[in-house]
Each structure stands twice: as structure tokens, then as C-alpha cells.
Length: 263
Image (cartoon, rainbow, N blue to C red; front, side, top):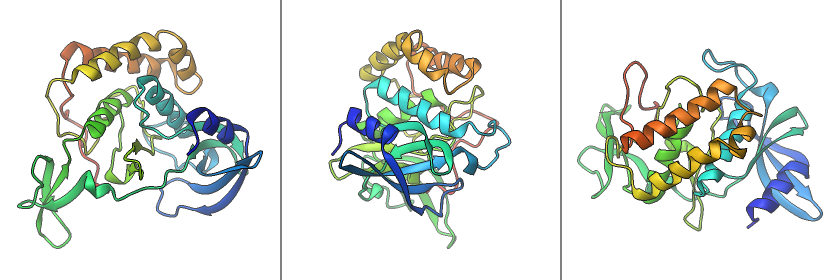
């Protein structure tokens, strides 16, 4: 597998060839091959011109939010977002992200009958399925998911669905589809509420403390290439709030807390 630095070079400067389209995506999402000096990889390319207008996110900003989310993820050291760049492509500028070959994510997140929640798992929401059966949205009590829940709180992720979680063969967990993140207003909507209100692990406190310092330096400058100054400021405010409370956030009012459908 490519190292991060090599992957970024390949994604940024390699020849990009469209192989197909992921038809279930709401925005134009293209599966591509990227090659450079005999090195090949699969990637996802989302051209800005294919972004669907949204009422609450400015037009043409989703690709930049994907890249900004990757930069923040890398600053945590948790490696939770695949290598992601902004580059020109066959359909103009867009986000280009390394493709991850995946395993079954239901080993970590799932929708199950309410009487079949696995031991030790966290129940997030109860409801009924299309057959009118009582079900629960659940996720494992897993350090990888817990890290991602902290990252999502920093990113203000408005759409953390189960389908946006990728598990690779080596056990690495990745989050994808970060186009509707990093809004200045509170919009956190996620499946990963299982630790809501609980104290943050010591590791998370250390990472958030370092992230706050990074935001005042090079990371903040890099983010301003993709976000407004107000949005970058809001990232810092969210980090400081997490450190001040020392706890995972809880669902707020006035905004749907869980995306539906959950996958």
C-alpha cells in the first residue's frame, strides 16, 4: 500500500482517467485510475462542477471542505481520512481521494432488532424499519470509532452515516464524504453518539490540545485556503469547548441529531 506522502504526490500530479461513476452518490462522484511513473492507484474524483447546490453550504465549496477535513485529520495523527487533495481533472477542479478497499462495516456499526444488540455495543437510536419491526441503531465500543467521533465533533460533521465509514483489510478505519463539514454554525449529525456526555479519553485531550496549537500556526493557514476565516475560527472554538467541558458532546436541539437513513 502507498505511504501517505507517495499517495499525495500521485493524487496531485498523476494522470487521472475516469473509469466509472458511483451512481448512489448525491453529487457527481467518479471512480478513477491515477498513474505516475509506473505507479497506479484507484481514487475518487468529485469535480466542483458536479456539486449539488445546498441551502446551507455555499456553492462550490464542498471539495475544499473535503480537503480541509483531511488536513485536520492528519494533524490529529489518527489517520482517519484517506489521502485527499484538490486538483484539476477531466471535468475541472475537484477533490481527489485515494480509494480504500473495504471490509464489512457492520462489524462496527449496524441496525439490529432491539432485542439483539451485541454485548458491549452502544445503542444510539430506536425506531421501526420498513417492515414495521422495532430496531436499534448501534455501534461498537471501539477506540477507532471513538477517535472518529471526536474528529467529527471538531469537523462539525453534518452527515456521519454508516455508509461513510470504511474498514480496510488491515483493520484501519476511515471516514469519507466530508463535503458538508466545517460549517460555522452547529450542525453535528452522526451515528456515533454512543459516548455522548462521557469524559473524553486522555489521548483525545492530548490530541485536541496539540490541534489547538497547530490551528494557530501552519494548519490554520492551510485551512484558510479552503474555508472562510469565520469557519476556521469556529474550528478553534469547537476544540476549546471540547477541552473546556472535557466531555464528548451531546445532541443539541433544533437540528436532527442522527442522519436518516443511517446507511
